[in-house]
Image (spheres, rainbow, N blue to C red):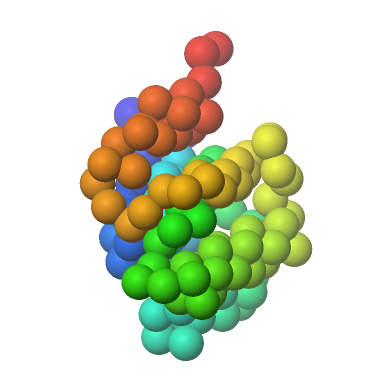
Length: 131
């Protein structure tokens, strides 16, 4: 029981929902797997939402992106840039890299279940470390 033992995770638009619900309900979800989020959706709404938080909630967040998530190179780079923007926004809000935020760029990884499955073990190890 308790937010410190409860996680939520999703990929793509599910990654956005995960970030939103975690920031809105940090008393319920304390650990978030924000996998390959579509940060560009709704003109970077998740970034604006994060910036508008009155204070940093107590959340442990894994945020990642594959470097080949797109139909072509410009689209893939835009996707990576969006994840970097969300990472930077979280840091400005008070998250600390390697403490309560892990950011990972998966070299050559595409936007699909196979790529996400390859990262699950690392995601769970960061979100729920051995005590």
